[in-house]
Image (cartoon, rainbow, N blue to C red; front, side, top):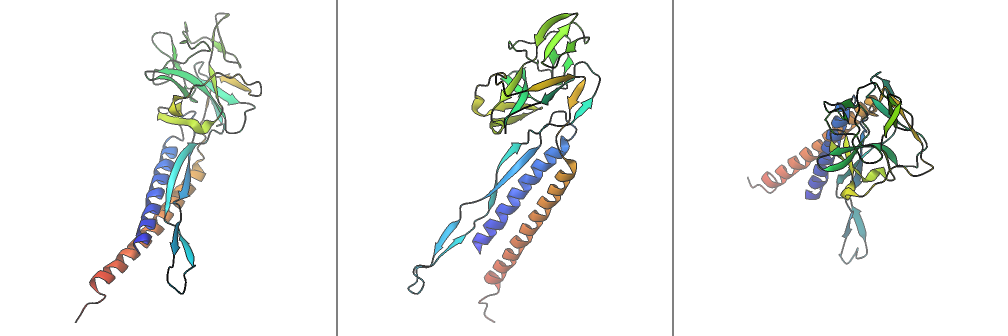
Length: 260
């Protein structure tokens, strides 16, 4: 019976964490470039039970011992585009990409180079092209990009032209395995264990940049709402199982074997 308590409790915990993940997706449904998280649930290793009595000496049974949320992985599918007509807004559009890979902008933070899909940039007081949190966007040489005004052109390959002269080219990083990316908040990502990464150098990888647009979040609101309801119902079912076990234990302790 105690094994049943643990199994039901693990189901409640995993569904609670899944609900928190879905809530975060819903909260960021309007965040440019946000990539929805997906949950991966797994069962704990099954327990092998053997009946060692003389009659059933060779009989064995396997018992599931619960479920846990193994990991959350971002879904890097392309989001739809929203036209803003702001020259500092730049959308990164995927072309031909290998499976499970992604493309990202490079930005400079206090903790080193990080990556983002959010092209909702702006120009700060120093003339730098920065994110909305003030982190400088980097060019292909790893340098910050300085602009004289917001009257500049970004070509499809990321080349920035101002007053008829090429001043920089936006750095676009190719991540071979997107599952190695870890979210840090504020739309920032880093590679797990700070693995090195290089700019796009694969001839089979194609992309283009679109000025005056931002990429929307790829959160599917209807699907997310459905999954939230499913997680809630599953949580409730495990909760009722837990209550049933609790009532059975109460009877076993306080009623069974009572004299008088």
